[in-house]
Length: 226
Image: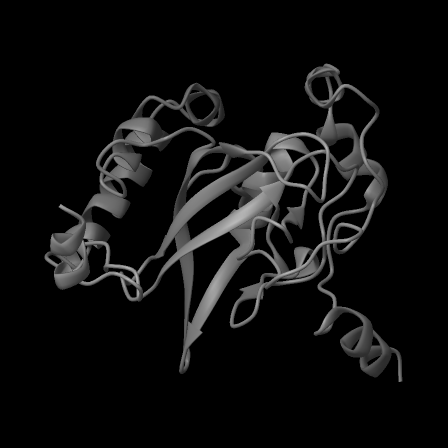
């Protein structure tokens, strides 16, 4: 009954997550988000009020998350399913934009699945005390309760992504991992070991990492504009 009601209201079942109290501690630990928005954090919600367009894929319907850490956790738990294979994403932030539906900037992230089969652009709004438990269409979120403690730590560190623009994405992620001081504090050799594993994975799909052209793009149309 309750799952049916959630589907009716939000378009799909809600995913288990970390407790709201712990998420609130990550949302704005130094008051920077509040300062940037010019007002206290927005409400806890699954979708922003007044949002329209496809959830997560539209600038006017961003995913509510709890600050920079919340964005990293949300994107780190996001997976795409290809038959029996579940693939996580590599990600980086392209930039920030304003939207008529919320106060404070909306962040645009580029993602690519770990098998190079899917590229996405998602929009997140970081000015909330907790993360949305709703998921963009065609994707899945790993339930918090099923994640090992180390996986949760990696998610908060944003192990497979960045809140900054990464040149030569996704290959540029390797340099960020190798210089990640938070990982070094966990174990001195950890960044190198993780970067080595990801490098091997990138090489496994060598030649498949080129970003596909958007559906609306054609060389003929581009030439007409020259």
